[in-house]
Image (cartoon, rainbow, N blue to C red; front, top):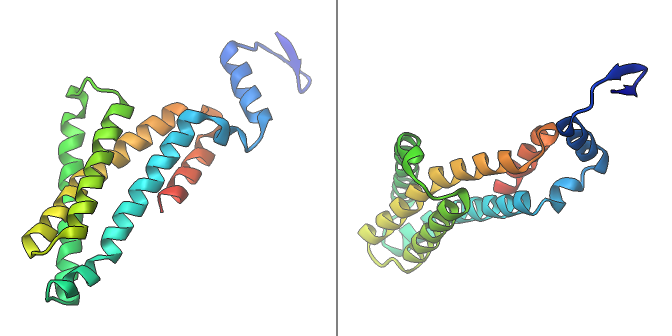
Length: 169
């Protein structure tokens, strides 16, 4: 037991770690390499999906369409993302692979979908690219959130998620 703020309290190893983490200051989260990795994943996810959404209109125009067709491409992205999130929530517990492995596969899927969208010369290819991106979006966001929660100190999780979601765009 130690004297803290005029009261005796039992200091456990967990309490000491939390107190030490809070005492280090705001830069502590950036020094946490695991958390910094998940911030990088969030930036990649946000940038990839944002680019696909912004690029939908120029891609639709290049394929002979307009704003309506661009909206349809974005809808395909959103619907496939929502459906993949529902499926992932039901089957994620069956995967033996860790968070970094899952994120790596899903990030590779984002790369494939982005390249596919960039070189698409037909509507079916553009829609397929949006499906590919959508299939990776929700599961990657889930993996990122769960892993970042585990990597951030419990006393700093509100701050950590603020940083995480700001980085994700």
